[in-house]
Length: 520
Image 1 (spheres, rainbow, N blue to C red):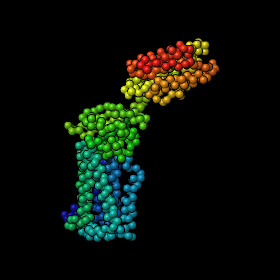
Image 2 (tube, one colour):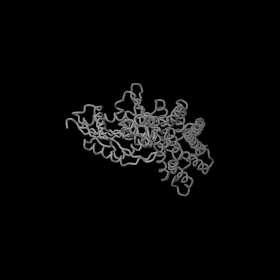
Image 3 (tube, rainbow, N blue to C red):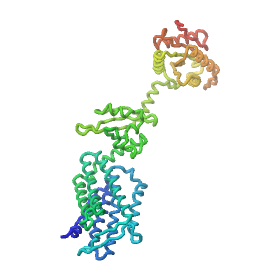
Image 4 (spheres, helix red, strand yellow):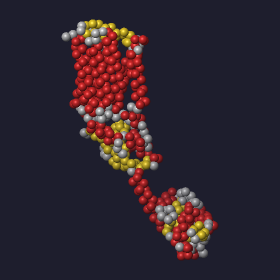
């Protein structure tokens, strides 16, 4: 049996293997990548079947027709491979209509150039057919300029696919890594064979042994599909599960580079997957988190923490788990859960706990928290601090004469009027009943007295609108300023303002009384 007979058998064997594999793969059509892989196998089958049929053609014209079918398989196989790689590795976002159209331009142009080759000979200048009974063999191809353009394009496409497949392989488990490497080897073997023939690296070969390379590839593909369950549902199900999680998931290697990120995490941080994967995580998320320090600090243990992304008005809990393989630490799994609804409820309850329901001002409890903070801050920084305490004159008579509803209306309007006269960093609080307090940071005794007088005048000039008509009310105010040499506690500070208020009421109401520090 000569080499032509061997080649003829190999061509049909390759076609049969590819066709059987394609039929087997189509059983997994629900798995991403299976359809494009099956199409690649069908194109391979067309390729090698056409080679065999061309050899038993009874005329050069018939042989040229089979060369046309053969080249269609050659032209479109690399495109099917790159589509499979992107689908199988989970990069669906890279396969939009625009990109697919761009990738298809050269194969479609190559097909057109092949069909019209007899008019320009840019694809194939000539083919020399030699009879080796019973075969008609295309022993010598004189290739045109366009052929080499398509040759380079096809090789680049296949190698890009191999690169992405290998890159994904080393992010997978050992089993998944082995099958990905097997697929790459399967694509490289016919590439090497075709390269050797196209450049005449083995002069003794009178035929293109692509078919032999494709038989070997078919065997490798078959072994990968059945031994390593290439289209096993479990990793795909896991991919779908991660992609559809309401929690954000980010996988980071031990160099703090993003290895994988699901759509939820992309949405949270307003990222694009193509730009996120491979980059340092610290460059992608808010700098306030200081993720690098967090990863270094917890490089050997898992941790839960609270992440507050205020610019997005959202709240998240962040969970960090160390990924280990045996004793080796490979990276980190970061899970981000949106807790905005829960946090908003907590914040609402916190607000309720510190807010007076009637006036919207800080309540008695919160007043002491605020004053305690300002009190010790002023002592530490040696800053002045003023405190005003006032109440509404004869408020009991207003309630007795007009009812508590009118009293509540006056309290609400009092809060609104006085708030407009205070600075944004002053703290206006309802102390209780008809009593109010104003904390005045960095305010001297004289400045606090002037503020109190201004409040008194504004209230006295106001006509309070109530359900009983317009009413005029007045307030009495007591003022105290912090003197650390005299005032040793927050309670004493409040007592000084309260005693000044009592003095203002004793002197006839509708007036301001200022506490006189003994050391002044």
